[in-house]
Length: 155
Image (cartoon, rainbow, N blue to C red):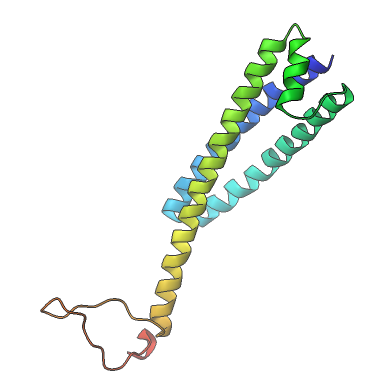
């Protein structure tokens, strides 16, 4: 009975993880285009999927523990060894693991883009506030000397 319930959870979570990966990829596009309304909608769409994955992960752990097994890959392997659906369990587990790894990698990629955008905005704000100047060059290619730095609002 535990094996069937686990298999159902894995199957459901594979679909959920695929949806999450699609949303993360759409999030990357929205970040690239700086489409904030779309980004906000995507973030709201991700929350229930993440909650469902967490809930099912807890349920899988509980099922393995109630069978007297550890809530990890070893416990799943032990359950699969004694199940007629053992091969399917391990295959679905591996498929889910790969999908979640892809989600994590895509999320890290999005995080790098967010940090790059933040640095760009900070730089522009610094220029507008007069705290920093962009690297300018004179006609000889040397760094230009700017006698007085003023915010653009006072230029």
